[in-house]
Every structure is written in C-alpha cells, then in structure tokens.
Image (cartoon, rainbow, N blue to C red; front, side, top):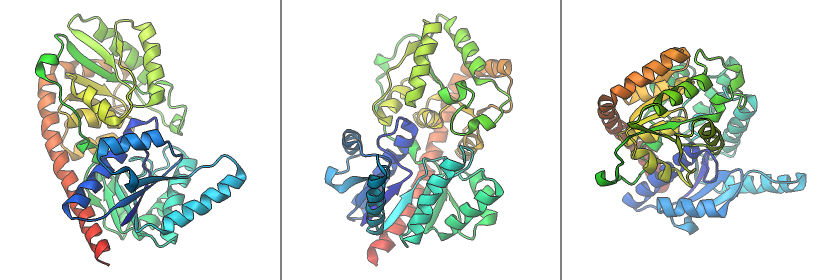
Length: 391
C-alpha cells in the first residue's frame, strides 16, 4: 500500500508538528509489522530536506527506501506548475491519505489563509477519489462559513478521529460522519529515561516559553484573540520568583525554533537561568523534559511530552485545545489564559510547584489513560488498512 501523509512534517522548526509525524509513522510501522502488510509512505510537505528525512528514518525505524517527500512548494511560477502536476500524479497513486493537519490547524483561529491551505489539500484528495483519513486532531473553532466547509470535508472522509470530546461536540451536530474520540498520537512518542544517580541535587524546573504568546500573538492570526493573562509579564515574574530560590535550577526549554531566540534573550535578563540548546528532533526534546521535576509549558506538545513522561506539568492554555486534550486524559490542571490575571497565575503556578509530588502521580495516571486511548487509534487504523489491503 502507498500511504500519503499530509499535515505532517519531518523538517519543521516546530517540534510538536514533527512529533506528530514521528508518532504517526511509528504507529503505521507497528501496524505493518503486526499484520504483515507492505507500506510505502509519501510525505507531502513544503520542501524536501534529506537530512531531516534520514533522521526520521533513524528514529522511527522506517526503511529509507520506504518513504519519500513530495514537495508542495516551488521557487518560480514555471516550477510551481510542474510541482502541482507532480503532486497531482503522486496523490492519484496513493491508496489513501492520512491527514493530521499539524494537530491543531483544522481551524480558522490562525487566519483564513492557513485554513484555506490545509482545507484546500483535503478537498483535492477527495476530488481525486483517494480515501482521506483524518488522524486525531482538534476541530475548530470556525466561523459559520468555514464550519460548513469543514463539515463537508469530514462527511466525505473514510475515518474521522478527534483528540478530545470538545472537538467532537463542536462538529458532530454538523457531520453525518461519526467522529471517534481518541487522543493525541504524540503521547506515545518514545524517550530515554535518565538514571536516578544522574539527577542533580537541585529541583529541576523547566519553563517552555512561547515567542508567539510573548510577542502578544503578532503572528498566525492570534493577534485578534484577547487574553486576560499578559503572558510576557507572567513569564518575567515567574522566572524572577523561581531564580530567587537556591534549591531550584530554572531551565528554559524550547519546542519551536523561534522560542529559542526568546530563551536566549531572557537569559540576558535573568543570568541564573540555563538555556537548553535547541533539539534536533522531538524524541531528544522529550528525553530532556523527562529528566525534570516540574515543567511549565506554553507549547502544547512540550506539555504532552512532559505529562506522558510522568513529569508534574502546568500546561498554559491559550485555546480550548489544551483544556479539551488534558480533560480527555483526566489530567487535573491547566492554566487557562482567560481565567487568571498575572499575579493570580504566578501564585497558582508556585502553589502547584509545592504540590509537585501529587501532580507527578496525576501525570503518571494520565499517561496510562492516554496510552489506552491511542490503542483505539491503532485498532481503527488497523481495521481500515486490513480492509483496504484485501480489495
């Protein structure tokens, strides 16, 4: 079978998007091996970076000759015409397309252009009469017109999976297609556990800063969204409070390339913090996060990495995708940016730090729930692949 992968990436500076790709490929390889199937993958993404594709193969175990990239962009108008023809022919050769829409981008919260890009490809797949499977992701919010477009797409899909009940409740009234609720695939991303003797004496507190929120959302359309919490003030005050303590080492951990620049700027203002070098892949990032005692994260897949590794975690939620995801796996807390003022948020975070042992237990239990939910994704995907293979 030839499987197209869209809304995935091996070469993006956002490690959350790359984590979803790694996790999806690993799941497919598991299904292939268990059921003695033959899979080859076509990764539809912006551009081909051979070194990043090779890294994906090393980390996931997929054979290099079983996966290739079909670039979606080109430099000149003439090249664009050629690229579109290549994409069309490659797409028609696929037995199915699995679309994860970067986990959270089947929405118009990031702007109409982004919505049109992701939805346009979905419609192209369907018009080519290639089965389209929507992998676990957040659906919405949408304006009424975009919601009708999204519902049309979802009704035409062979399988629709949501990663939280809120997404299902938001879209199911407009969809004839049943939406199955599972959870985010990145919960099952592997990592290397650190030995107890390797742990430092001081409490290791990781902060995953978001340049997107720190700059007041002046990208991706989030500038139109107003929050009660001023994220930049919260971050500054929290770092100042934590670095006063002799028993804590604050480590700034970036999950998006642009956030690393912000982390370095913050270190100039708060010299006691340690800036962890940016990671080459999401497995390396999760391995680092797994060695922490406490983690505060504004990038969702950084917090997914932490909770699934059993680390006491404070997710900072700027949209309902956070609340929906963590409620789904029974993780009890989320710092909602629309519910806290700056000082309230700092005080609440410091209180949760005191309760780190309890939150660690909550994270471990939530990880078990998440793994069980990803088992359902595996079963539904296996059922489809077996049916498709028998035709």
